[in-house]
Image (cartoon, rainbow, N blue to C red):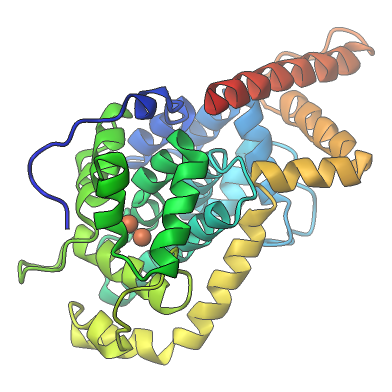
Length: 344
Ligand SMILES: [Fe+2]
Ligand SMILES: [Fe+2]
């Protein structure tokens, strides 16, 4: 468990790229009670690279709509607010997973499993349905931060903790001067995430203390449940039965989750597979394997631009090609900058 005294933050954590501004603006929009589909779509469309990812997601096998979706407004209206909120947060976090190292993949699987389980717990309890999935996606940002700041050292730390059955939080403090909860709290503040998410990033490993059921307890249960279902980063030191894990939840929710655990397991695997295609390394490998993929992405970017209802029409027949080239150049420049920043 984290201590209350704030630890010194290692210099390398300061070098981690900011939370994508588009995702932060969307989170602020989703927090409002009067969300308008049109303003969400316009916000997504204001960031072309992100918008093209949302379009790709809307056209993925997950939904199998009858016709191709070619504008962000169409995508948002077809998917609905809940799906768009989940997708945009997940896609924003996916951009940080820039390696195929085993430990990073385990973190990604744990994050997706925790998010989906948090959503299932929210449905079963009827509480925090608007925030649960996002809280699950963001709960381990401190681990992501340590992995980004110390790629090889943190991977070795996870391996050592797993091999020697060490308490990972203790071991993180020994190696880096702070654990991933402390790093997460600090990062969430630095990224100006809402207070609820700061608390969850910092306290999701704290055992429930008997206080009324809240979002942090919900994520705590989801995180431990993910470990229990083998979506762990390091094995829990003590194996825990499902009944004990679900104990902080009201009885009807415990019963429902226990009965539906097989369905939930399958949903997690499907969810991991669907979002796996959007990890930078997976997308890169697909492009290297298939130049058609790169061309398809380029066409998608172009369709995205010309199909926006308010976009200015192309002034000549060759405009599309120039737009394609410009978009590719901008995307390449942004990608190169992000990669450079990330690897510093
Ligand atoms: Fe954690
Ligand atoms: Fe976790």
